[in-house]
Length: 76
Image (cartoon, rainbow, N blue to C red):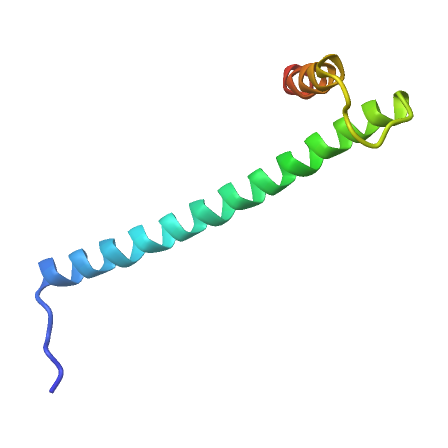
């Protein structure tokens, strides 16, 4: 048997469904932004590694230069 909802129950149901949809969309957007940021950071670090003809960072100053480049990207 189907239960008929009151106006208040219907509004609450719609609000809950909308809230769940918004939350799911926000989570998808956050995941996409994180992946895009990772790709951008990787590209910055690869460019620095290529500059020094290295595959990995052997010293702290190289890692610091990579970090500085990533931070500077955000200022541009």
